[in-house]
Structure formats: C-alpha cells, structure tokens
Length: 313
Image 1 (tube, rainbow, N blue to C red):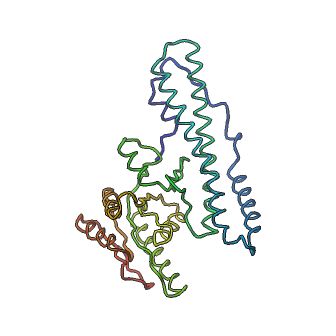
Image 2 (image 1 turned 180 degrees about the vertical axis):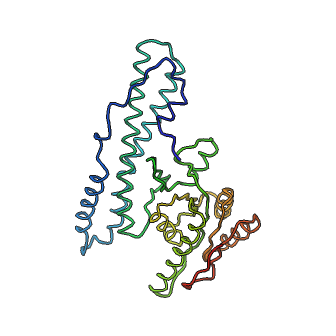
Image 3 (image 1 turned 90 degrees about the vertical axis):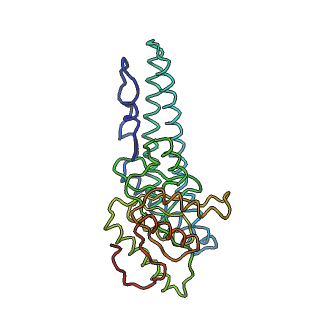
C-alpha cells in the first residue's frame, strides 16, 4: 500500500554515496500509549465543556476541526517529504562527486526521513482522534477535500478520494492512494424512516449485509459515494469500525446531470467482486443494471428492511 522513503531510495542510483541512518529514533516521538491517553483526556475535557450548554449543537463541528488539526499537520509533512524527494532526484541527476554535493544530498535525505517520520506520527494522532470522533458522532471522519491516507506499516484503514486514486493509477504510482484488496461497491441513497426504531433496523441491515460480504471478501476495499447524510454514511461508519480501506467517489458537480452516471462508470471500472445495493435513485438503478451486465454479483437490498438476511453467496 505504501512505498516508504527507504524503499524509494533503493530506486535511486546512490552508488558512491554513503547514507547514514536518521539522526533520530522512535524515542524522539510520542509513543502510541501517550498519544491515545493524552488525546482521549483532551477530548473528554473539551467536549464536557459543551455538554448541556447552548454550544452543544456545535460540538460536532468542533470535533471535526480537532481531527483536522492533525490531518493538516500530516499533509504539510507529506508535502515536505515530496519536496525533499524531488530535490534528491535533482541532486542525483547533477552529481559531480564533490564533497559539497555529497553533503547536500545527505542533508536532503535527512530532511526527507525526518518529514516522513513526523508525517506518520501526525497520522497516528489523526487516527486516534478520528476514532474518538466516530465514537462521539457515529460518523467516519473525512477531510473536506482529498484523501485520508495512512502510511504506517501494518495499517489497513484509509479513506481515499476517488480522484486521487484515478490520478495515482494513471501515473502508475503504487503509493498510499492505491489501496490494495478486492473492491466491493456499496450504493444507497437518502431514505426517511418512520421512526427511530425503523432507522436502527435499517442501519443494522446495512451493517449485517456488509459483515456477510466481508466474510466472503476478507481483503475488501469498500467503494462508495461518500454521502454524509445517506446510506453511505452508515457504510463508512461500518468500514471505520472494521478498519476497512475506503475508496470514495464523490460526485463531480461540474458534470451536472451526468455526475452520477460518470461516478457509476468510475466505480465499475474497478472490476468489483460485489455490488451491494440499498434503496436509492434512478442512477443507482442504472448502476445495478450495468453491474449485472458485467456479471458482477449484486447483493440486492433495495426492497429489504427486515432483520433476517440471507447470505450474499
């Protein structure tokens, strides 16, 4: 899922150069326990301040901004890493064997290593805050624009924007914007339930269906439209709880009435194993028709609101 900087270095021609180890270690960054305990304490104190006050309705916006602080910090470090990597390529292209040139190269490598380590730490802080966010609001945290990649080794959860994915795939770049696994499309619109109990049943059906498909596709990458008020919101929350990678194809509003159909084309181009369909619009109906024509297995829940679910097969 991620080519780290050390792996990237192996692709450069560094013959004749001696690259030292980073000038810092894991002890120079906050440990996982400290991150979790500190952020949980700050979160608890901050939102108890809003509880039972006139500001309580604004607490979700504050919660989103709290997570975004770490996301923006990680994004800045990623930009610094990209700049340092570009500088390394330029230095290698103009290598003259001089001591000054070698010193400049080593300095840029140290900058890149420091930026990468800091980025991973800020992403760990963001993920901890995001888990607090979903516990508080019931929603998966996403940035306003772009992706929420996770570069740490051994971490499978990520929320990748569809445009970032398509751009990275077109450039043949196997990086954090190219999630690995088997695509499964989830599609559902905004529905109104008659009661709170009906809403819980509907949400439970979505989660139960996704759990059954996950049993058949353990390396699932959940592909959806990213609607924060519809069935997509419930699916995204499920994926967050299960640490499942998400690939989000938001509507391109510039396309007008064609936006939904274009998104269908993009999602189906992934050759998904399943399409899970809950009630939605005519665009969703067309997605089901196209999926069947391509022999993609459709788990059809469009007319189903009960609690007894059959296996998707």
